Image (cartoon, rainbow, N blue to C red; front, top):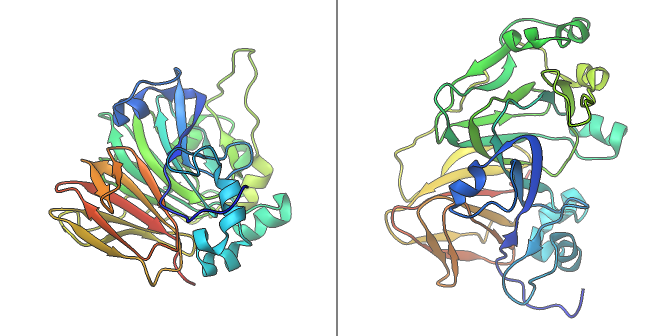
Length: 327
């Protein structure tokens, strides 16, 4: 990168992904024209090779998040984040539109992913933005199974009867630690916050084929090794939906702490003790940050760790904020 400039809150051009199961909800939600049909995902904040987000605002416009992370290091990430993740941006933020059911899948933990793929594992969370009537989220096991039974079970849609089935509503939160089997049913639009990893083990894909008649690859052997087979409640996480002008925690783990903030007045956000970047996402309304950065519904802002505080203006707005907590 050229000469360093003073780091500031960053907005990005999203990376859009056309998929066989994607629809048109993401850009309708944002109030924009879709750049192409069948968009299943937009990668809103990404430092993944080949899919890095490009800055859209200020003097760093045109630079991607990988370059910026390499140049600014702990100034962007926070020292504790930099030390933990070797200077890599550790989160990936997406919007997902499931016009059809997604594949049944599971993700490995850090240890397995490191040994098998030299990658981070994947723990993630979903925040539901919209759901059609009758739409489902599937997470965890509702019936007992095992690694030995899995190969036969996933040969047909019988596997769906074994998964925990949940009826989602806007604002619902689903936390998915590595090892929890899951899928997004048709008719959902959601925000996904996850570890920066592309490692997914696909177990069942409804026997779909592409335009050439080919089925997508399955990963039964790896999946069977990393699945948590316990039967447990894996539904939406309860939280106080009525609280205003104070962050309400939605999901918290070693990799991210995500909260909801509903505003009735201007809000001062103290970031000085975090030692982490902060991601802001607008779910409802519009906000102005530090009297400079204007965000409307569906837009995000990456706030560097070097920024110690924010003034957020936007009465009636709902924000989702996420950062990497100290261990």
